[in-house]
Length: 295
Image (cartoon, rainbow, N blue to C red; front, side, top):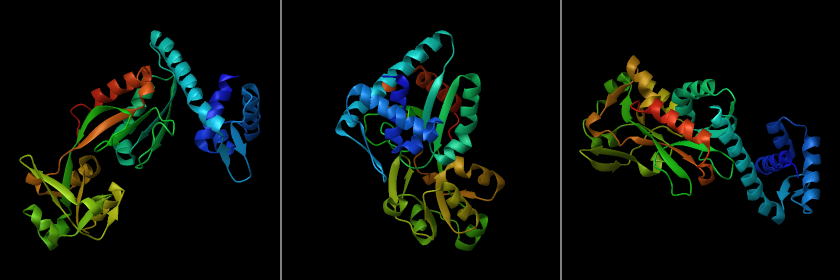
């Protein structure tokens, strides 16, 4: 059994087919197929069921997967432990982060980190979807907001302030809200689940929830920000999305005494990555860089 075969097997299962796994690993589909046949022969068990439509994992393959992943993790941690003795981090690290925050805040930090550790290779997914960290093979994910209960380990990276704002043109036409109750008379541009949960504001530590309505609902903060700049209504967004528009005067903050609670910023990672030297160094770096820089 070859370590390379274990890497290919895990990649095939994660990707769902030989073609996608081959593309990720920069190998030919034929080579991937041959190595999987060799792995099955060495184990004496069929791991994968191949057909023209899709690839399925057998019961033996499902049983073997966590063992293969654990071996690869142990090898990677051993390599990282040895490289740490040389003050050098190496290997491949998969990380997921939100699109807007990743582009606006983390992109330059990740570039700086990789410049300091040139032997590392990062695979980065920018997406606002809720990734399955363990199931999809991520080493870490950056998440903004309340964390769901899980077996993942979480480490706080700070908070992100949120603001209610609108364009000067909209406020001139519709009026400036003076209290949260006034929001029911305004067009409100809603983000994600706000259509169901409403906007949650606070004053002097007391929270209040108001159902709001408006012409747009989106899971993308930049689209809602641009709609607010165009005068379509009020928007409630993290400061890192609207900061430049506030600075330029394209948007104006309102209801400041009733600002919503800040969003928590966390890094989450699987329990088996606790000993990872890359995890430790990257988390310390991000905490230092983001400390005191909440939006």
